[in-house]
Image (cartoon, rainbow, N blue to C red; front, side):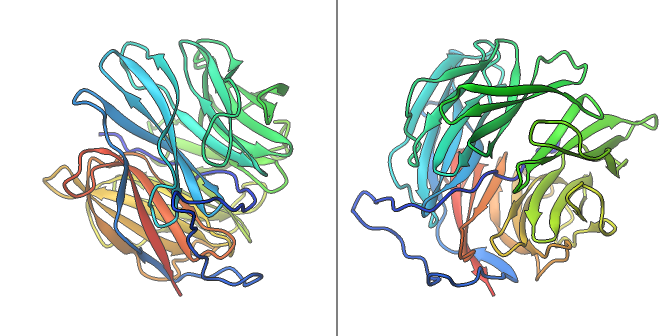
Length: 402
């Protein structure tokens, strides 16, 4: 089974007051103006919650993306049924993992022969929210949303049928995303749109290789782009390149690793950015880089309490400039996975021990959002089984340990 890498959730928006169904809102323990917390570790802060279960025996829910929204988050997933068709849904959650409102259903469309290819990504730009749906049969769709995940208007086709779109991210005054026609010739396009989905600009990227494995939009709207290609020795070489907001190069590509890595997860820190990748089935490497994506140290292997093969990880920024890494590994001779988190300093050094969060069934994409500005809470959202519940979309609250 191939490793599944979940990229860090992108975007960060302003805080807003959003009412619960009973009129309340969960408190924030940090007072106004308090500095963001530095966490030595993270622990489970409450029961996990199933936020969406399959609607029938023949359906499957695939979680893909989560972004901060007020005092919580918005999560998104697709449900694939046996017609075959795919339905895109969102749901707002509090940081204690409880739903803030009911599931919002957006688009339903046929899939390519029942194969799961449709990916939804969310982003928040200031107070504007949006979703991007990768629908190769009908064209990529952009949907303006509010802070609860409700549609603000009709979907807008932003790329033609046959195009694969991904990685919606916030930029000044709107959003950007990547797309390719699937020819495999390395022709990736960066497109920017306004908050309503109207086109602003597009540029064909001169990427270092045809395979894109991650993107991190920085505070100035420039971005680091991860690409990978196969070496003569049969391994995968992964590189980073710093590109301007319009997609033009700002620096030459920097080789991160030429081992077995492909996808790279990134989080902006106070020291530049932190990167993480799988060196092989049993190793996670972390490396701090500067704003041009060039190493400021040497890669370090993350200490692990277990020895099972790794199957996924995600790296997310914390408000104090640190990063939070979550990863999961297969429990030997089972179909279960152990899930772990660790707090990392900007130089990639663990702030404390790796913390086990529990054992889960059929883990898929895992992503995490750390609450801003206090940094005292985080929420893990993932595809998989939680205890005796069926596979679906799950949320698990985390608390900061000083």
